[in-house]
Image 1: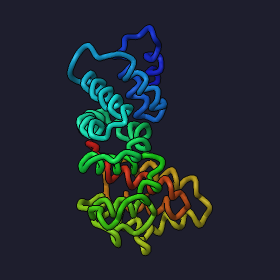
Image 2: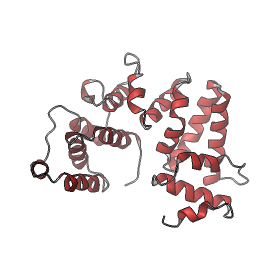
Image 3: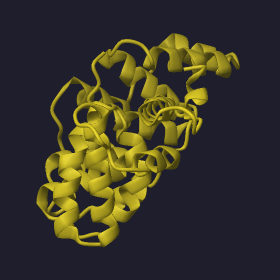
Length: 238
């Protein structure tokens, strides 16, 4: 990772530039716009692997620029599995969620665009725009989390992660006594580091509930909501 920026030089092969840009974007060390610029720099001459992602993102980007919802929807659905394979959902949401939110995409594509919006910085605005009467229980659950509400009162979502998030956003969430003691002693920085280390470790629903609850308790509401939404929406191995 420390040398990945060196592979972005114009004298380096296109594939090496693409791979370096993806690594840096995943780490939050490069603007998603820079990656998009590389994706759309030229047409892929090969197939499979990263070239398939380049090809499908190019096709989706072209469709979106055309403004045709009937073309954009299928292109998005085709590109999304490749975006997921590269673990680039959040950068792509950052790039495209606003434009997609302004299009009347049909059915499955519209549902995907809504969830992409929840992965963007405008997640709360996206949630407020949801038609609660027509939305699925899962989407109502996600929208409640995005708004900082108790999701169990608005919807339902299966799985241990959803249960952990619901507990963290409940009005009567119970926080660990040792964490409250550290905060009472003014050890805020130490407690924040503990939470971040725990949340970055192996998946554990109990730790997720406690970590989100503490983040909300100390006023880091935006981080708590975005962490909860990413935990619910991103499928990661380990």
